[in-house]
Image (cartoon, rainbow, N blue to C red; front, side, top):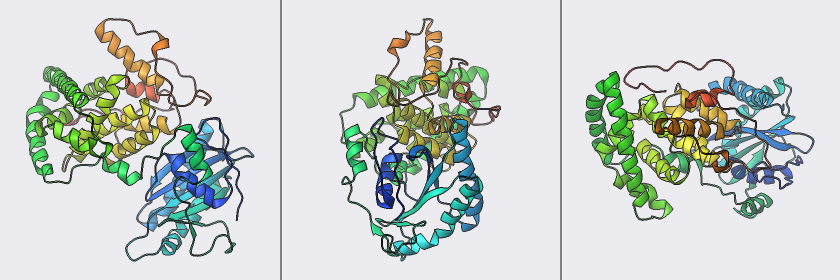
Amino acid sequence: MNQHHESSGPVGEQQITLRGPAELADALPYLMGFHPNDSVVMVALHGGRGRFGGRLRLGIPQSPQEWASVAEQLAECLIKGSERRGERPDAIVIFLCQDPARGESGSQTMERMRPLAQRLRTACGALDVPVLEALCISGGRYWSYCCPDSRCCPTEGNQMALPGTSVMAAAAAYAGIRVRGTLREMEARLEPLNTGAAADQQRALDSAGAELVPKILDEAGRKDVARETLGLARRLMKRIREAPVAAPSASDINDDRLISHDEAAAVILGLQDRETRDKAAEWMEGPEADSALRLWRALSRRCVAPYEEHAAAPLTLAGWVSWSTGDEPGARVALGLALRVDPGYTFAQLLHEACNQGLDPETLRRCLRGERHARAGRRPRPDRTRPRSVRPAATRRRKTSSGSARPEAAVARRRSGRVSPSRRGSRSGR
């Protein structure tokens, strides 16, 4: 069995030693904030003690023909991204997570994905960064692709530890870190409705589109639509905020009941305008943040076929509010879904990269506060009122400077190159 000594990433200054595949496998949900289903996860390690660094996740490509190119892209993305942040990885740990298909055992799943693990190891090695461990997690068991010793890594795999019984679980509980369920469960809260109400929502979107899209494409009409969209969104947030508190399992259902099909359609269509979306992004902190996040989630669920692409705006807003309020796993899931429905959505691209690079959202918060205060004709509040940083104070952040008043520009300041111009059409925002 290969021995590993890694200090944890998510629990601040507390140092945790993980030894071997078992503890690495158990640590994965705490590293990500959720259980990653059907995912490739790569984690950078730094220094002689193997400190956790950058990490990335991608859904496992269904076609094995894509594995070679995907492996090269993932290795380059993680290694080059770490270099841009000033620290090249000394090693990498790989996780392949997938439940067995129908009629398949966990061992068969592991063997089926062995070529992908080998492709990833080769791609990292080609960039002179070794893979310290590559694990398959499937059906409640784990396997090591790197350990040839059947005494500690048998062909039938090893049973995963019971939840909450490991050293990582204890440290995470002490630090107040929680695992938010599985990736599949988190995505389900944001995906389009598949109930009988979907047909009614589609008709409402058809009707709203016929009425609002011509106005959005007209300069004078666009301002009226923006004002009506933001006013309706504020009323819906107030309605959500004042509703009786429901159990977490029922909160999404209750939020859906509070918003009519016509109201949802009007706000969804209105948010396709970039300036309207940017003003809505100002509801990212304080008492507004929770009700705004619930509204954006509910609107994402209302983007039923054939309007799935329209979900990019509310999904991006949900990701932004999650990131701004400290929920980085939730932010990555929402932004990842936004890019799934519209890979060219610039605001989601920039937020996703900034969140993954560990940048501080305060730069964008400051920009949006400035916009809001400028419209109100008053000066921004002093810096002492700014919210607590997303990460613990002991974690190093890059210094950022104030600048452009547009959210895309604020997030893009750390990027090299130019931002692609917005595409125009019935959906005028990116």
